[in-house]
Image 1 (cartoon, each protein chain N blue to C red):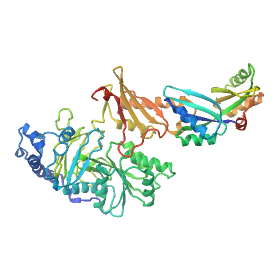
Image 2: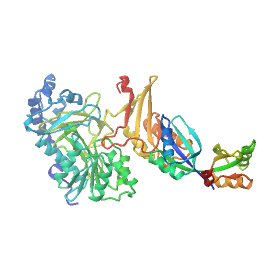
Image 3: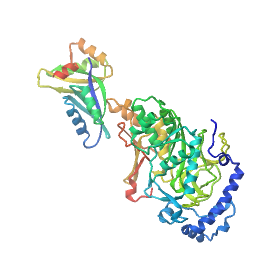
Image 4: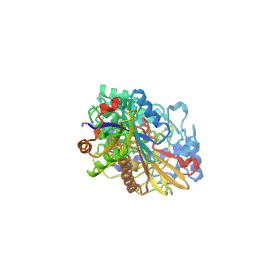
Length: 143
Length: 439
């Protein structure tokens, strides 16, 4: 059920994000969500896209350094307290969130959250058992 | 192996005979240079020296040194000892240190040089029937033509590839089943990496040996190249000023390079005082060419830091051996008062499992030296969080500190982003030079 995230190593200088986004544009792939982790020297650009195979091939063609990480995609109701419920569930089960980021679509019913945890399967199991909807790669492509 | 030596009489000559031969040649050569090279005659005259003052090997200590600066001053014809009509070749230094030197050769000089290279090829197991792929640059650089000529003399099938065009190198290597590869060690490492990328298993080729030189390299890099290419990697040493590669070469024992003492006399000196150091002590290597005709050199300071040993070598050669130089004294950086050689950094990288692709950047900010090393990370070390990378950087920094005594700032960069060299690698960017700081 886990969804695939592209993690791209970008040096901290002008133009690197242009190279990355250009490559994804060339592959005609849509970006659904993104976040950047940065240090003084470099950043890691994390993307959820509609077709990660195509995007990865195009990025590698452009000499970008990219790896694929599995993350958990969660659909939370677009209302106050919904995210708190998810986070609380994981905390109660001692599952540590390394990072997370969210994205909202035109649909007002749900907001989507990408979670990176050490054990995807365990997190997914707990969430599903407690009535939280997960997002599949297919869902991402069709959003 | 039937034949270990290209010229057994010279290569296994008893040490006392080598010394006698050197003495005879030295006395003759000093007179020849005095009479034919005005530049050196003036240096001798300034010291009140005449050729007849040089009567034995020890008298060499009376002679003035030559440095690269002298050769530059004498450019282009000042060191030429014979009429141009007797010369058949010009070669030139790569200008690694930004100063070119041109060297001249008579046919005898070329033959001597190529014979030295032939000795190196035979010592690496070469004989007629071997396919020698020469991937050193051809042209003014001595690497290509030296090994090319040596390969001809041995009777090997010679592949004059020159450097670069790695796709073609690999195609020829596979199709023609090259058995001996000659190039710079950094290019050999790159070829090994390229073979792996193309899906060849380590050693899935016909190569048995490589002869690598023209830049300093470490034992760790040797191990790496030997593993990736499935060969035995031999070191070769030389300078354009003294002829080219082949001044010294490694035998199958891989324990230092035998200096071709019938043609070259080696000394180790204290680089600061010029005083000759006893065998085994580390210092600057100084060469005297004993029989060169066109571009003779007496006591040429190589700036290479090494030591010599006359310990018996089990290959049977009697020539003195020089240890792999730690680097040219002008490769040495003084950073925050500490001597640092790029070869030390390479050793750490290879020990820590990295590729030898790195770049050192030294600068001075607020009167303090900054010391940064860019290193390519291994693809498997990258995932989605910076933490893994910064932890690796810290670990590598610790290993560097242990080796160097000072802390560099390590920057892991994406694989394949540091420019590969097909000739000599540019490892160091010293930005302090723009400030006019003498490093």
